[in-house]
Each structure stands twice: as C-alpha cells, then as structure tokens.
Length: 82
Image 1 (cartoon, helix red, strand yellow):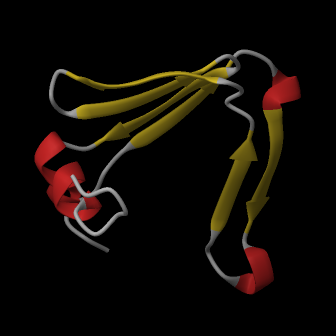
Image 2 (image 1 turned 90 degrees about the vertical axis):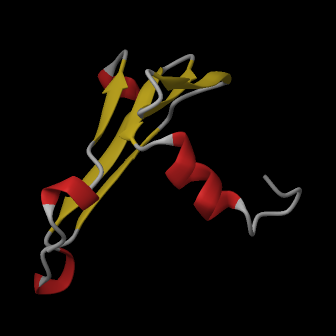
Image 3 (image 1 turned 180 degrees about the vertical axis):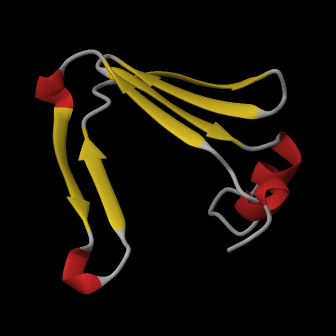
C-alpha cells in the first residue's frame, strides 16, 4: 500500500438511497470493493481550496482529495489537452 501522503481520500454523498445502485465486496475472494450509483445531471465541477475536486450532480456529490497540479499532470494525454 502507498504511504498515506500519496493516497487520495474520496467521498460520495447521495441525496437518497434510490440513487445508490450497488456495492460489491470481496469479488471472487479478492479484497476489491466496487461502489456504483447515479450523480444525476451534472451541475458543476470545481476545485475546493486547491486540494479537493468536487463533482456535483442533481442526486449528490463526489469529492476527491487531489490537487490541480496532480489533475493537470494526469489529464495531459486526454483529447483536447490541458
């Protein structure tokens, strides 16, 4: 496992259980976790305090602890360039 300073925390907050689709734990004897749901129509994407990516939809919010520097580094290869 990577050191905590290199890991990125995340959270998913949904407004209702009806927007939660599934969670799968220990698929095939492995320690994997799969979480799935519906954020709904995209309302906005922003970087909060230069360290948290926040994606907001009509059904909830996804947050990822990541800096703009890290995001741009990994987005350079995407179509449209950043």
